[in-house]
Image (tube, rainbow, N blue to C red; front, side):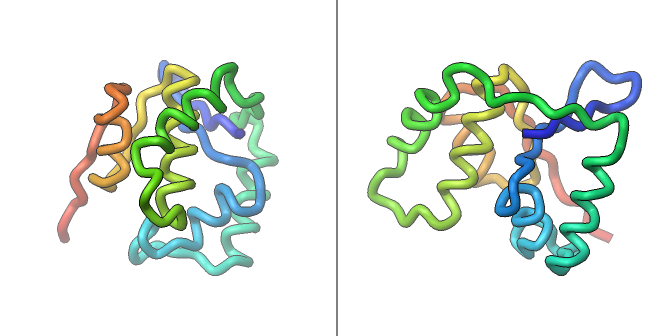
Amino acid sequence: MVSLAAANADSSAILPNYPTGTPGLLTNANVMGDSVLTLAQALDTFDRWSEDPRVEFTAEPRGLESVFRQTAAQSESKSATKFLMDAFLASFAEAERATLVTFDSAFAGIARRRRAPHVLLRERHH
């Protein structure tokens, strides 16, 4: 995972650092909306973030697999296509004791059901 620490802040954003992780999120229209990137743009963005001195690579937190399995058990009967990545990211944040921040109410619902810290932001409408 990669942690993008905000300058002069006590918080960070945690992003997966493997090909289907961050680039996968950046190329997903459901995640990015009108700002969705092509795969080439997403890989370029990921490469720039990887070279940024503010980026810190961290190991997966202890207990992640256990938390992930508990989270995944919430929806064992559902198709795993979208839920799998959401469950992993929510579990990572929970195991890291981080606050999950999202625009996606379904994603926030995963954290809510786990009673994990989360913030659901509202989209700005222009």
